[in-house]
Amino acid sequence: MGVVMDNGLGPDFAKQHHIDYQGQGQGAYGMARLLSAKKVVADVFVSITPGPIDILKQAGLVDQAQPVASTRMVIAYNPQSRFAQQFAQSRSAGQIPWWKILSEPGLHFGRTDPTSDPQGQNIIFTLKLAERYYQQPGLAKNIMGELINPQQIAAEGGLLARLQAGQVDAASGYESATRSAKLPYVVLPDPINLSNPDYSQQWYDKVSFALTDHTGQRKTYHPQPLVFYAAVLNNAPHPQLAQQFVRYLTSESAQQIFKDNGYDQPKGKALYAR
Image 1: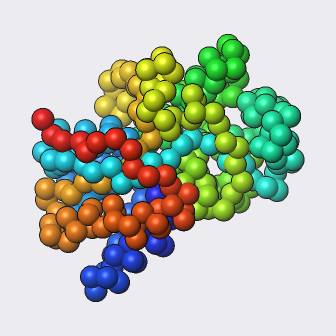
Image 2: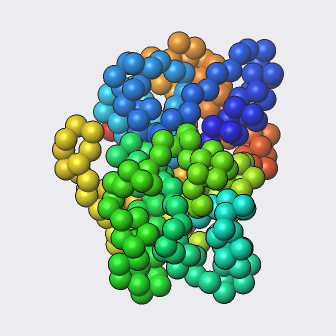
């Protein structure tokens, strides 16, 4: 969400209120941990999925979070890659299954760290769901190797930049960020793209995986629909402006900026601390 925040929403809000805007992009879980440890101080935190918000709730830094947008998982690819024509054919006519292209020898696939970034978790869920949807046991492992694979994993903020630079042929992505980066991508079916809460019970809730997290604890991860939430932090240096910014994100003008950058409307209800 860094592109739409820094190039659209932030400057628009700053102009309306005659203030300076400064954003910092990072994997949502990593940023939530920095905020909860007071290593970073901010006015508003914007996260995809409720998981990172929960970290801040437990730290007493968030009382509620408002849904402001949504998106879906896609497979982005570099238009100059030697595999680009195959992806284009998969995208337009479905002649070559996208998952077969990702399994091609020599293809470099990029994704983010599932222990620090929701997108890194979501591509694992997507590929596990694809195994069920296409009835292809072993599909996820064929594409990813191990869940933590240093040859594929990159920092969230740099993944699409690596793709644009040709360092990888294809990468996991949110449709919103991929469109903002003006990269071509393959659309995935709703039962596997995590965009539609209506598929949670029948599809999304059927997959999970376990990893050792940054604290050394073994943790089981479960998918959540791809909704973005904005929360005012309880230690915000500018609490009134923070509240105004969150309200602004749901306004008609802000929602149009979201739409122009490939985001869908917010889905679901606000999150509240218990």
